[in-house]
Length: 265
Image (cartoon, rainbow, N blue to C red; front, side, top):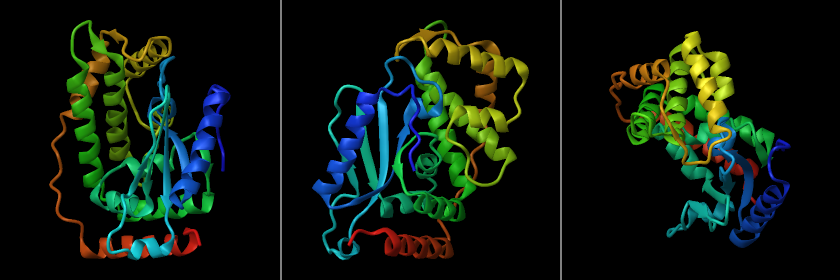
């Protein structure tokens, strides 16, 4: 699979392609899913936004039997607007069970540098099966609250942080109305949630402003949007218990199935 918009810088895309290929050679892994994350995929990029490539990979099966396993992340140097990092499949599954929503978001990114659709579909089904909605809600509540508190107030609010709070608020609204794995991007979320006309109009207004404002640009937050975000992020957190053993069993079985199908020889 590949889905890269014309708005992406072709030179940067070629650098990402080359870096992913080199990662496979240097680390002896297979990159199965590589996407754009961050503001470009979320739908509110600034003119100087980074390219945040994130990927999922698998090692040879024998590597998972090592008594002293290596790191379960691969990080590459930051160069200009280029930011390329990835997670091992095992880490991705463990985090999904723990309620981390990042894996599901990567699997639902609208922009794909390279990827195996069968792998994506199988892992997305597994994530949907083992992810606990209360944990997902807590994840988005914490992300939204943290970013909202960092945004500031008055006329000097950081637009980047505002949108980093708006997207979790939209996702929480989506979770209240739908089952399954929520979309990653703002456009899909807006299409699938109910908002007042005032809030939707103010989101559109700020998106248009951010599209022509540098990454650290500031502005005031429109009143209806501010009140809506505060209300959504003010929700009471759900009580969370440890993941049941049957969930961990299903996660382990799903991981082994994916490993058997996709691990490099």
